[in-house]
Length: 172
Image (tube, rainbow, N blue to C red; front, top):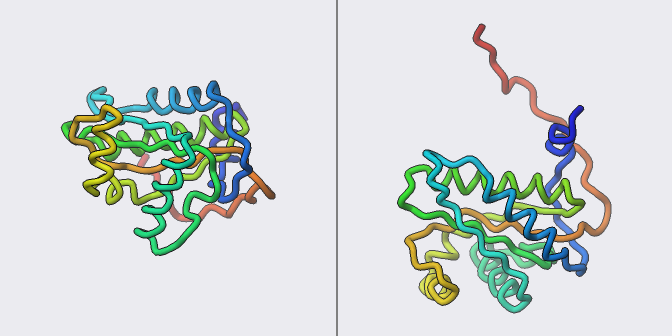
């Protein structure tokens, strides 16, 4: 099996992280993989915000937890890569999803763990987070697509779960 297919087959959502911060170089490689994702009409609508500041990360997690009615929703990951997308592109949600998928695979290939966390859309609809986006320089009309929590896995790596049958149909 080639390395790409092996990476796809062995990647898992990680739900426990060590405190160890990934290197800036590895974070940048994961981001670059996201920026290389396919996008409708090559509009390149996704925008990635790398959050390594613990205070901001904790605030994002607190909001996410309130929306989900659960605490610890970022699983202790030291990095959050927020994926937003410019709403002017008609495929922006799909483009952002491709960005997240590329980043999850890149993280796994580098020995990092990652997990796609929802609720970025309602988070970045909140006035305080819209203001925060403006403060960091994002002035376009965007929608939150997802948070990618990132870091070094702690504990045992998740085992493969069986794939459901009956999801492929051939028309020859």
